[in-house]
Image (cartoon, rainbow, N blue to C red; front, side):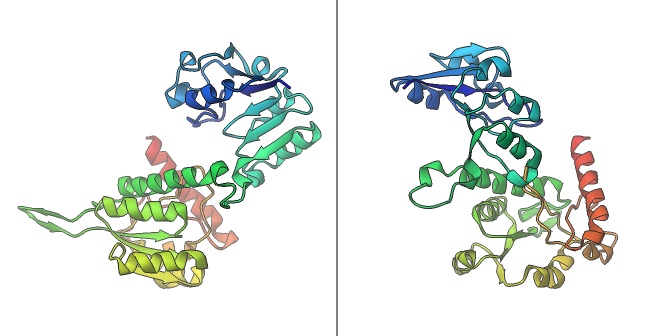
Length: 295
């Protein structure tokens, strides 16, 4: 039975990824009965031109590329307008971020669109080839460390100059999953002294091994709220907390921690509150850091 796969262009702001790279497309169309169509410019932000997708049909708009398609591949959840253009029975493969797109999920259900949520595929040995989260978490951890280095008023590495020696910055990484471990590795490569806190039992042994190997200076396991009260407040005077891109910031740092910080706290610090009553202050901080970056 022939299978028609559609690759639309990502329309959500700031998205530079593409659902299928030319190498993957070449492997798909080499199979009998598989045809592939793309929307013009779908891979441009990722560095691919339409000509790189050999052997495919090229359409000018979303409606044209998905018309008659059996399967649609996207990175981000389609908009409500795009969902309206999908025919009943179409299979959508995407990263859903379900709780951030409740209206879109309901629209998919009403339209009888079968959705394969790549971000909900269990991370097991049998499903390893379909693991879409680990690669993205690795990039997120790497980028988080770079953002922290950019926004911090201090240099990360130790530097010895004729004017004296600058001690390395202290970086605290909360969480030791895929993103956390990459953030630890990146911060160390930048020359910082790294401390880490593990929230899940599966990550604690990893942190202990890293500490024994001398790759981090201190570890913490246990209650996150207790860790915040005992440690995080002390760091807010001279550290910047950088959230992972495209993810909700974890509710780990209480707004009361900022109220005890001295005037030397960097104006670029951002965090979220563990108390809903404090969230307006945290949102103001997030808005300020975004304004400074865009400016």
